Image 1 (cartoon, one colour):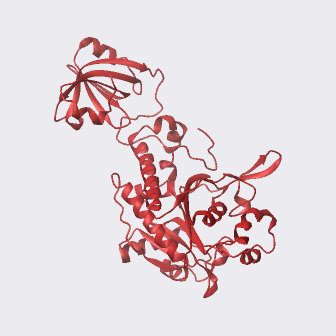
Image 2 (cartoon, one colour):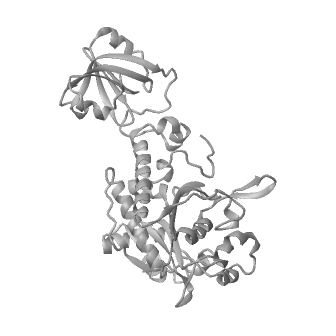
Image 3 (cartoon, rainbow, N blue to C red):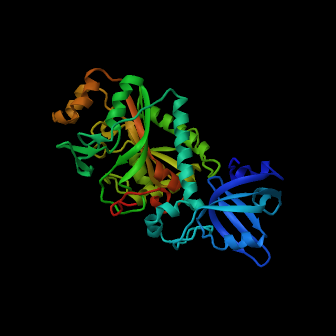
Length: 415
C-alpha cells in the first residue's frame, strides 16, 4: 500500500490508507486512546478502541517512527475533518531513551542552548521547522524574482586566497601547504561574472571570523547576493533589491504578512544621524541608531524598511564607488528592516586605474580579480541579504539562532 501524507487524508473518506511518521503525542483516556502522528505535512489523529492495539501504543514512546494502516473516517472535530479508525500500528524505529525536550507543546519551553545542543530533535518542533520552511521559501522567491530580470545563478569558491572584506575577520586554513581562507563573501567573483552574464546572483554560505556574541551575528550564515552591470548608480541597485524583497515577501506569505512598497523610504547618512539623534561625526550607525531609524520609517512612512545611503567612504570596502559630487561619501547603502541592518550594497568601482589607486599599489593579492577590470567592466553594483537575519526579523524573534538549523558562532561548533 502506498503511503500518503496527513494533508491528503481528506481526499480518501471511507478508504483504507497507510500513513507514516513520528508519534507526536499519545492521549490515553478510559474508553479510547488517541495517537497523534506527525509527518512532514502536518498531523493525523488515530483513534484506538481495540484493547490489543491500545496495549501496544501504551508501550510506544513519543518520537518513535510508526506506520499506521487504518480507515479514513469523517469527523468535523478532527484535524482537517478526518481521523483514522480501526488502526493497525507497526513500529519502524522505537525510541528507548528519555527525550531532552518536549515537542508536543505549542511552544518549545526548553532554553535556546538546550534546543541547539539537541538540534536534531528540536528542529522537529513545528515552530522551528516553520522558520526553516520560510527560509527555503524566501530563497525561492529571491531566485524567481531575479530570474525574471535576466539574472543568472552562479556558484563561486568558498576557499579563497585573500580576504574580501577585511584581513582581520577571516578563517584561515592550510590549503595544501599554502595559506587559504574561507570566503567572507562572493564579492570578487560576482563582480567578475558581471563581465560574463551582466546580471548574476548566488545563494550560499559566507564566513565571518568576528568575535561577536550577540543575537544578530553568526560566524557562518547564508547570503543572498546579486550583482548587475550597466547601471547609472546605486539607485538602480536599490530598485532591483526592492523587487527581490517583494518576491521574497510573496513567497513567505503563507506564514507571515510582509508589505514591500514599490519605492522604499531612503535617507542620506547625514540625515539618518540627525533622525537618530546621533552626533554629526559618528562614523557608523550603532544598533540603537538603527532601531531609532526603523521606528521613524514606520511612523513617518508606514514602512518596515528604510534605505540609508551615502555612508562615509572610510566605512566602505575598497571597491565601493564614491559619490561623484562629494568623495567623502559613497554610492553605497544599507537597508534596515524593522530597525536592523539587513542588506549592504552599492555601486562598485569599475575602472582598473581606480582600483590601483584604492589599493595603494598593493595589487598582487588581487591579481586575478583585477584582470576583470583590466579587460573592461561596465558600471555595476550589487547587494547581499542575510537570510537568517531576514527570517528572524520577519518572525520578530530576538536571536538569529532561533531560525538557524545548526548555528556557528563564537562558542558553538557542534552539532
